[in-house]
Image: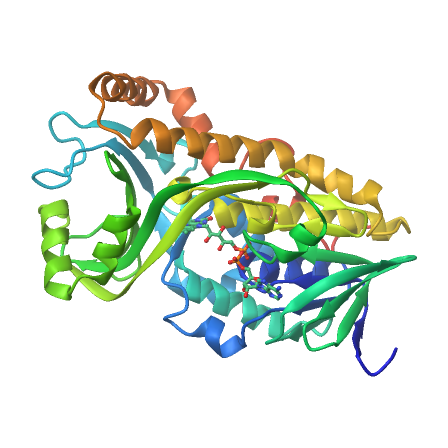
Amino acid sequence: MTDNAIFDGDVVIAGGGLAGLTLALAMEQVGLSVAIVDALPLDARLDPKFDGRSSALAFTSWRMFEAIGVADHLRPHTQRIEHIMVCDGRPYGGLKPGGPGADILHFDRTEISDGPDGEPLGWMAENRHSRHALLSAIEKRDRITSIAPVRAKHYEERPGGIDLILEDGRYLSAKLLVACDGKFSRLRKQAGIRTFGWNYGQKGVVATVQHTEPHNGVAYEYFLPSGPFAILPLTENRSSLVWTEPNEIADALKEMDEAGFQEELDNRFGDFLGDVRNIGPRWAYPLGLRYAEQFCQERIAFVGDAARGIHPLAGQGFNLGIRDAAALAEVCGEARRVGLDIGALTSLRRYESWRKFDSVTLAASTDMFNRLFSNDIAPVRKARGLGLSLVNKIGPARRFLMRQAGGDTGELPRLLRGQRLDTVSA
Ligand SMILES: Cc1cc2nc3c(=O)[nH]c(=O)nc-3n(C[C@H](O)[C@H](O)[C@H](O)COP(=O)(O)OP(=O)(O)OC[C@H]3O[C@@H](n4cnc5c(N)ncnc54)[C@H](O)[C@@H]3O)c2cc1C
């Protein structure tokens, strides 16, 4: 190693967002040495103002968090999702689930799990707490090296390995490089991988509200003419809002003064959660679809938003990244156990084919739902209302969709079944 070489191990992860951090823990569990690089300092990523989002974590994602040692740190900050109400709603006169004219699809977790403590439909956690829990777990792992703040510049392949070159001239060597550098991945660009996708011309305005009536663990997704509006339950009688609007309206909502925003909240909510008050700052995230044609090449794999970024209306983006991490760690663990090269294309293709179906299905369905529901065209409204009511009446369809949203479909990687990967025998 020269002076500029700062790591020589099994896996280098470029990007320490939620997906990269999750992957680091999963890879470490199969006995691999891991380095994770991020452009931003740790303090900046942990600052409460850095990321205002909260994520709905599917029940299979939570099982994985238990298996990789993250759940214990995160549990005090999580809220169980007991019900999901999907409503083709109208904002006028306040949102009233089940009110006159509102078509509704109701998912109730007791249909798929038993007892008061049975597995919920999912868990809500603020991203800042998830990030903190992931980093706390990483701190305890000797085989993970964290390097930040520094930006990954490019990679260079060499026989039997790959080097990641950083902008400050240092470099890391590994058998496998994983790009977790987000939707606009620089490494994906270097790899020449084509993407398809588009911007929706919408932004998701994110805010946290406190209300006087309990949410009872219900997550609401209202499809309104201007875009989906989600009310997601958090601890302590709070809810996280994802308020989707065309760009200019979203910017106005984000920038308006507190009194103006409170008025918008009052108009929108009516009284179904009692007195609703905004607490804390507001954020506005541009929304788009970006899908990579390949999830791997020789010695490099793409995970999380670097593989595909989707519309957040189903709350699945991070869950897809978690599923990527579970599949890639299992594939690499198996390769290592039988003495194969973890960076070889044959291993990585297994990862890619495992992850493609789920990814395409969610990218296409979220895109279709956003288009179908973000309008007020009378015949379309009628047809979609009919569709919601019909599915609502069919038990097996409801249960299938609940399992689908929980990530419980197809051949599940072991971590998503809650099984640790370091207990697999040779
Ligand atoms: C409004 C909204 C609500 C959402 N709600 C949900 C939800 O309820 N459930 C859910 O599952 N998902 C949800 N998502 C999606 C989820 O937030 C994303 O899918 C997830 O955060 C992506 O994580 P990531 O680690 O792949 O990418 P990112 O979060 O983009 O992280 C990329 C990381 O790479 C680093 N980086 C970038 N370039 C470089 C470089 N050259 N060198 C080094 N580091 C680099 C960045 O600093 C960053 O830390 C939501 C998204 C939005 C917009």
